[in-house]
Amino acid sequence: MSKPLRILAIVNLPWDPRFGAARVWIEMAEEWSKAGHVVEKFCLTDAFPAAPASPARAALRLMMFPRRALRFVRRNAERFDVIDALVGTLPFTKRSLRFEGLLVARSVGLYRLYENFERAAAKRWPASSRGKLLGRMFYSFFNQRKHAASQASVKNCDLLNLPNSDELLCLRDEMKSTKAAVVLPYGLAPARHRALHDAAVPTEVRWRKKKISFIGMWSPRKGCKDWREIIQRVRARVPDAFFLFLGTMTANDNVMADLDPAMAGFVEIIPQFEPDQLPQLLSDCGVGAFPSYVEGFGLAVVEQLAAGIPTVAYAAPGPRDILQDSLPELLVPTGDVARFSEAISEILAKDPGAYQAIRDRSAETAARFSWPEIARETANEYRRRLNEILSSGRTVPSGDANS
Image 1: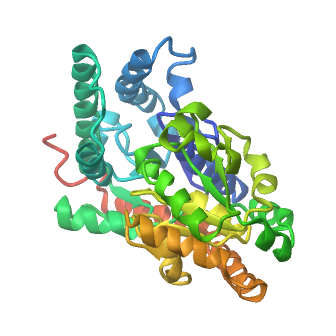
Image 2: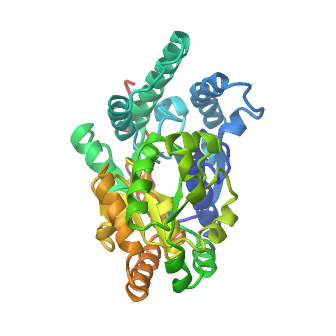
Image 3: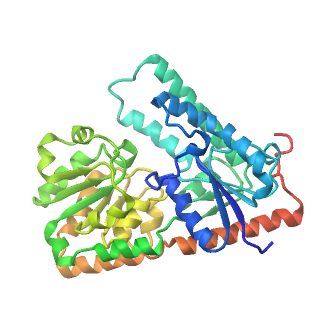
């Protein structure tokens, strides 16, 4: 098979680039379409066009989404060569789907690694309130269903698409799975690279401003419990350091509750922004900070590197693969707040020449992660796997016949 691929993307989020997981498919689809492939999608708003009335109803929709996706695939299976579905969204055998092409389960953060973090976080930062009993029971059931759906996706797919090498290690060593898998990173479109690069102010201006940027939701997984100490330690060494939090997706009061009201004078919070605003928002930032405990990949790290911003990160799944080869000094042990703060302070203390050098290395590192190249490599891998299925006459993964 050498003709353009017909690909169906399935994700249980709105088709909106402000959602990190959806953004992966959106940007990949753009590149595939440019290359001549035909890409369609089935997302949350296709399954449920109206907005949910409450968080509980939103959770119910997520539980119901796989059945809606199943019905869509059954009606349209013959129109596609490849189904590229978020892990957990299509937990069915190919026989039940009536699909004979390549079924891919794509991880944007392997559920086992995220569950490991949640257990560790519950012990390290116990919640002050456990909530109502009914709510706890509902969300416990929700999480059990989510786990079961994720396991079924891994079992029934032809191929797992993983964004980092830690996930492959987890799949083999912890999950004891021999499922076919490929590790393919995420990237930026060339126009995005250029916009981030071109918006950057001169090195001397950044060096003087001492501004530290963070991009991400405000949550324990992203390091919100560490930020108060990070700010205190950095400011102790660099008294004029300023902090910019972008895309926290929560009220500013919630962020300041984890920090300290006294920090308001040197902390700026922008809860939401449009993607095309990011280059200007980062333009005068000197150091990036990403204290995330586990990621699928970490596009926020690549975006800051593309803007010429050296970005310190925990050596966690995702950022480790981005930084370990070219900028290993920017990785610190996960959860080591003292070393994390020290690494930020060391960059801020560099002379302009040394800072320019690490800024150049940051931009070079980001250039390795390009959507056109990744999309081409992904399509080639899918075509190879699809040809194997078609040439062997095997349209159902091994073990599925009795599922």
